[in-house]
Length: 125
Image 1 (cartoon, rainbow, N blue to C red):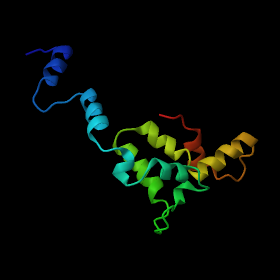
Image 2 (image 1 turned 90 degrees about the vertical axis):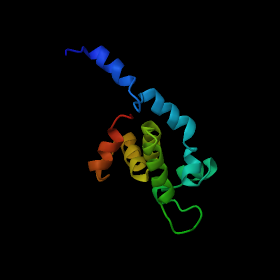
Image 3 (image 1 turned 30 degrees about the vertical axis):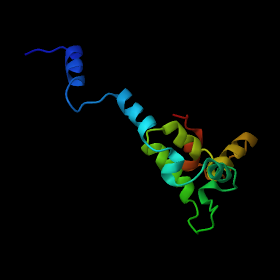
Image 4 (image 1 turned 135 degrees about the vertical axis):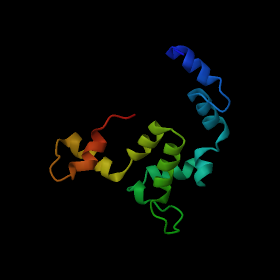
C-alpha cells in the first residue's frame, strides 16, 4: 500500500496517545508549576543572584549551596524546553561577563577564550 506523506502525518496525529508540539507547549506552560516554584525560589531572589558578582556561585541563603540556584534555574528552564530563557541565565555567568567586557575593550589576550569564548560568541537560540 502506497501512502503519501501528508496522509501518513494526518493519520499519525489521530492515533491514540500521539501529541503535537502545540499540545506539549500548552501542557508545559499551563500545567507545570512556575519555574521559580519548581526550584523553590522567588523572582526577587533570582534578581539578586543575577545581579551578584558571580551568579554561578551565589549563596543568598547562606546554606553553603553556592551556585545551586544558578544551575537549578538553567536546568529548570532547559527541562521545560525554554532554551532562550536558559541561555539568558547562562549569559550572566561571570566568565561570559569577563569575556564580553574584554571583547568590548578589544582585549582578548588572557581571557581564557576556549569554551567561554565560543559560548559568548554563539548566537542566542
